[in-house]
Length: 257
Image (cartoon, rainbow, N blue to C red; front, side, top):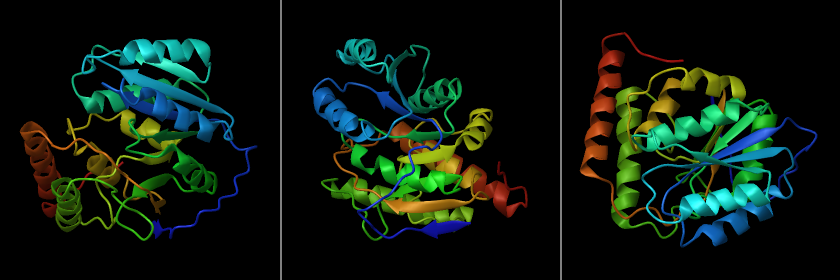
Protein backbone atom coordinates (compact mmCIF):
# COMPACT_ATOMS: atom_id res chain seq x y z
CA UNK A 1 0.00 0.00 0.00
CA UNK A 2 1.58 3.28 -1.15
CA UNK A 3 0.57 6.79 -0.18
CA UNK A 4 2.00 10.06 -1.48
CA UNK A 5 2.52 13.04 0.77
CA UNK A 6 2.42 16.56 -0.67
CA UNK A 7 4.89 19.10 0.67
CA UNK A 8 3.89 20.51 4.06
CA UNK A 9 6.39 22.53 6.10
CA UNK A 10 4.68 22.04 9.48
CA UNK A 11 4.92 18.75 11.38
CA UNK A 12 3.69 18.01 14.88
CA UNK A 13 5.36 15.05 16.52
CA UNK A 14 4.47 13.50 19.83
CA UNK A 15 7.92 13.09 21.28
CA UNK A 16 6.70 10.65 23.91
CA UNK A 17 7.16 8.32 20.92
CA UNK A 18 9.47 5.35 20.71
CA UNK A 19 13.27 5.66 20.76
CA UNK A 20 14.81 5.82 17.31
CA UNK A 21 18.13 5.43 15.52
CA UNK A 22 19.83 7.11 12.60
CA UNK A 23 22.56 5.46 10.52
CA UNK A 24 24.93 7.35 8.25
CA UNK A 25 27.78 5.87 6.17
CA UNK A 26 30.72 8.27 6.34
CA UNK A 27 33.53 8.29 3.76
CA UNK A 28 35.89 11.18 2.99
CA UNK A 29 33.65 13.67 4.76
CA UNK A 30 36.43 15.78 6.32
CA UNK A 31 35.77 18.91 4.25
CA UNK A 32 32.04 19.17 5.06
CA UNK A 33 32.07 17.29 8.38
CA UNK A 34 31.51 20.30 10.65
CA UNK A 35 28.79 21.76 8.42
CA UNK A 36 26.88 18.50 8.28
CA UNK A 37 27.19 17.67 11.98
CA UNK A 38 26.13 21.20 12.94
CA UNK A 39 22.99 20.86 10.80
CA UNK A 40 22.33 17.38 12.15
CA UNK A 41 22.65 18.49 15.78
CA UNK A 42 20.29 21.40 15.16
CA UNK A 43 17.69 18.90 13.97
CA UNK A 44 18.07 16.14 16.55
CA UNK A 45 18.31 18.57 19.48
CA UNK A 46 14.52 18.80 19.15
CA UNK A 47 14.08 15.06 18.56
CA UNK A 48 14.98 13.21 21.77
CA UNK A 49 15.59 9.49 22.06
CA UNK A 50 18.02 9.17 19.16
CA UNK A 51 21.15 7.09 18.71
CA UNK A 52 23.25 8.09 15.69
CA UNK A 53 25.56 5.51 14.12
CA UNK A 54 28.38 6.85 11.94
CA UNK A 55 29.78 3.98 9.86
CA UNK A 56 33.34 4.38 8.60
CA UNK A 57 35.41 1.88 6.63
CA UNK A 58 38.50 1.70 4.44
CA UNK A 59 36.79 3.63 1.65
CA UNK A 60 37.56 6.74 3.69
CA UNK A 61 41.06 8.11 3.08
CA UNK A 62 41.00 11.34 5.08
CA UNK A 63 40.41 12.19 8.75
CA UNK A 64 36.76 11.16 8.81
CA UNK A 65 37.40 8.30 11.24
CA UNK A 66 39.20 10.53 13.73
CA UNK A 67 36.48 13.17 13.49
CA UNK A 68 33.77 10.57 14.14
CA UNK A 69 35.72 9.20 17.10
CA UNK A 70 36.07 12.65 18.64
CA UNK A 71 32.40 13.38 18.12
CA UNK A 72 31.31 10.12 19.76
CA UNK A 73 33.48 10.93 22.78
CA UNK A 74 32.02 14.42 23.21
CA UNK A 75 28.36 13.66 22.43
CA UNK A 76 26.93 10.36 23.67
CA UNK A 77 24.15 10.40 21.09
CA UNK A 78 26.77 9.61 18.44
CA UNK A 79 28.39 6.21 18.03
CA UNK A 80 31.44 5.66 15.85
CA UNK A 81 31.33 2.33 13.99
CA UNK A 82 34.65 1.27 12.48
CA UNK A 83 34.00 -1.43 9.89
CA UNK A 84 37.18 -2.28 7.95
CA UNK A 85 35.63 -5.55 6.81
CA UNK A 86 33.14 -3.73 4.56
CA UNK A 87 33.53 -4.56 0.89
CA UNK A 88 31.12 -1.96 -0.50
CA UNK A 89 28.64 0.73 0.47
CA UNK A 90 25.84 -1.81 0.94
CA UNK A 91 27.90 -3.46 3.67
CA UNK A 92 28.17 -0.04 5.34
CA UNK A 93 24.41 0.48 5.34
CA UNK A 94 23.68 -3.01 6.64
CA UNK A 95 26.33 -2.70 9.36
CA UNK A 96 24.67 0.53 10.49
CA UNK A 97 21.27 -1.13 10.60
CA UNK A 98 22.63 -4.05 12.62
CA UNK A 99 24.21 -1.68 15.13
CA UNK A 100 20.90 0.15 15.44
CA UNK A 101 19.12 -3.15 16.13
CA UNK A 102 21.37 -3.65 19.15
CA UNK A 103 19.59 -0.72 20.80
CA UNK A 104 15.92 -0.46 21.73
CA UNK A 105 15.21 1.78 18.73
CA UNK A 106 11.76 1.18 17.26
CA UNK A 107 12.23 3.44 14.23
CA UNK A 108 15.42 3.38 12.16
CA UNK A 109 16.27 5.98 9.52
CA UNK A 110 19.00 5.85 6.86
CA UNK A 111 20.54 8.96 5.36
CA UNK A 112 23.70 10.11 3.56
CA UNK A 113 26.22 12.62 4.85
CA UNK A 114 27.68 15.68 3.14
CA UNK A 115 24.30 17.47 3.10
CA UNK A 116 23.11 15.32 0.19
CA UNK A 117 20.23 14.58 2.56
CA UNK A 118 19.07 17.50 4.67
CA UNK A 119 18.72 16.69 8.42
CA UNK A 120 15.92 19.25 8.68
CA UNK A 121 13.63 16.68 7.05
CA UNK A 122 14.07 14.05 9.77
CA UNK A 123 10.86 15.05 11.63
CA UNK A 124 8.79 14.12 8.57
CA UNK A 125 10.11 10.56 8.67
CA UNK A 126 9.43 10.22 12.40
CA UNK A 127 5.95 11.64 12.02
CA UNK A 128 4.79 8.98 9.58
CA UNK A 129 6.66 6.13 11.20
CA UNK A 130 4.86 7.02 14.44
CA UNK A 131 1.55 7.00 12.54
CA UNK A 132 1.93 3.35 11.59
CA UNK A 133 3.64 3.41 8.20
CA UNK A 134 6.13 0.54 8.06
CA UNK A 135 8.28 2.20 5.38
CA UNK A 136 8.77 5.93 4.75
CA UNK A 137 10.62 6.77 1.55
CA UNK A 138 12.13 10.11 0.62
CA UNK A 139 11.20 11.09 -2.92
CA UNK A 140 12.80 13.68 -5.20
CA UNK A 141 10.19 13.25 -7.90
CA UNK A 142 6.91 14.13 -6.20
CA UNK A 143 5.49 17.59 -5.53
CA UNK A 144 7.77 19.42 -3.13
CA UNK A 145 10.82 17.24 -3.86
CA UNK A 146 13.92 18.19 -5.84
CA UNK A 147 17.44 17.18 -6.83
CA UNK A 148 18.97 20.61 -6.25
CA UNK A 149 22.30 21.16 -7.97
CA UNK A 150 22.62 17.59 -9.22
CA UNK A 151 24.26 17.26 -12.65
CA UNK A 152 21.88 16.54 -15.52
CA UNK A 153 23.43 13.10 -16.06
CA UNK A 154 22.80 12.11 -12.44
CA UNK A 155 19.20 13.35 -12.60
CA UNK A 156 18.64 11.37 -15.79
CA UNK A 157 20.20 8.24 -14.31
CA UNK A 158 17.95 8.40 -11.24
CA UNK A 159 14.81 9.02 -13.28
CA UNK A 160 15.61 6.33 -15.84
CA UNK A 161 16.39 3.90 -13.02
CA UNK A 162 12.99 4.57 -11.49
CA UNK A 163 11.15 4.17 -14.82
CA UNK A 164 12.91 0.90 -15.66
CA UNK A 165 12.37 -0.50 -12.18
CA UNK A 166 8.66 0.29 -12.24
CA UNK A 167 8.25 -1.25 -15.70
CA UNK A 168 10.29 -4.40 -15.11
CA UNK A 169 9.40 -5.01 -11.47
CA UNK A 170 5.82 -3.80 -11.47
CA UNK A 171 6.50 -1.31 -8.70
CA UNK A 172 4.80 2.07 -8.47
CA UNK A 173 7.01 4.42 -6.47
CA UNK A 174 7.84 7.80 -7.97
CA UNK A 175 11.45 7.47 -6.79
CA UNK A 176 12.96 3.97 -6.68
CA UNK A 177 16.57 5.07 -6.17
CA UNK A 178 16.54 7.54 -3.29
CA UNK A 179 18.43 6.53 -0.14
CA UNK A 180 16.76 8.73 2.49
CA UNK A 181 14.34 6.27 4.12
CA UNK A 182 13.00 5.03 7.44
CA UNK A 183 11.52 1.79 8.74
CA UNK A 184 9.92 0.16 11.72
CA UNK A 185 12.27 -2.10 13.64
CA UNK A 186 10.58 -5.32 12.49
CA UNK A 187 11.10 -4.32 8.84
CA UNK A 188 14.82 -3.78 9.41
CA UNK A 189 15.04 -7.19 11.08
CA UNK A 190 13.59 -8.71 7.90
CA UNK A 191 15.94 -7.26 5.32
CA UNK A 192 19.12 -7.42 7.41
CA UNK A 193 18.55 -11.16 7.78
CA UNK A 194 18.41 -11.66 3.99
CA UNK A 195 21.54 -11.58 1.78
CA UNK A 196 21.09 -8.84 -0.81
CA UNK A 197 22.23 -9.11 -4.42
CA UNK A 198 23.12 -5.45 -4.84
CA UNK A 199 26.62 -4.18 -4.13
CA UNK A 200 26.14 -0.50 -4.93
CA UNK A 201 23.44 1.92 -6.13
CA UNK A 202 20.74 -0.70 -6.77
CA UNK A 203 20.58 -1.36 -3.03
CA UNK A 204 17.79 1.15 -2.35
CA UNK A 205 15.78 -0.14 -5.31
CA UNK A 206 16.18 -3.72 -4.12
CA UNK A 207 14.99 -2.82 -0.61
CA UNK A 208 11.95 -0.99 -1.93
CA UNK A 209 11.03 -3.87 -4.21
CA UNK A 210 11.40 -6.54 -1.53
CA UNK A 211 9.26 -4.49 0.89
CA UNK A 212 6.52 -3.64 -1.62
CA UNK A 213 3.77 -5.43 0.35
CA UNK A 214 4.17 -3.29 3.46
CA UNK A 215 2.34 -0.06 4.21
CA UNK A 216 4.49 2.75 2.84
CA UNK A 217 4.45 6.43 2.01
CA UNK A 218 6.57 8.72 -0.14
CA UNK A 219 7.49 12.13 1.27
CA UNK A 220 9.24 14.96 -0.58
CA UNK A 221 12.95 15.52 0.05
CA UNK A 222 15.49 17.97 -1.32
CA UNK A 223 18.56 16.13 -2.58
CA UNK A 224 21.74 17.90 -3.59
CA UNK A 225 25.47 17.59 -4.27
CA UNK A 226 25.76 13.89 -5.14
CA UNK A 227 28.89 12.31 -6.51
CA UNK A 228 29.26 13.50 -10.14
CA UNK A 229 29.68 9.99 -11.49
CA UNK A 230 28.53 6.43 -10.98
CA UNK A 231 31.11 3.70 -11.57
CA UNK A 232 30.82 1.23 -14.42
CA UNK A 233 30.78 -1.68 -11.96
CA UNK A 234 27.89 -0.11 -10.04
CA UNK A 235 25.86 0.25 -13.24
CA UNK A 236 26.60 -3.35 -14.27
CA UNK A 237 25.57 -4.65 -10.84
CA UNK A 238 22.35 -2.62 -11.02
CA UNK A 239 21.45 -4.09 -14.42
CA UNK A 240 22.23 -7.63 -13.27
CA UNK A 241 20.08 -7.27 -10.16
CA UNK A 242 17.22 -5.67 -12.05
CA UNK A 243 17.18 -8.45 -14.66
CA UNK A 244 17.33 -11.11 -11.94
CA UNK A 245 14.24 -9.81 -10.16
CA UNK A 246 12.49 -9.22 -13.51
CA UNK A 247 13.15 -12.84 -14.54
CA UNK A 248 11.80 -14.09 -11.21
CA UNK A 249 8.70 -11.97 -11.72
CA UNK A 250 7.86 -13.10 -15.27
CA UNK A 251 8.49 -16.75 -14.36
CA UNK A 252 5.96 -16.45 -11.54
CA UNK A 253 8.56 -16.71 -8.78
CA UNK A 254 8.66 -13.14 -7.43
CA UNK A 255 10.57 -12.52 -4.23
CA UNK A 256 9.31 -10.39 -1.36
CA UNK A 257 9.85 -10.15 2.38
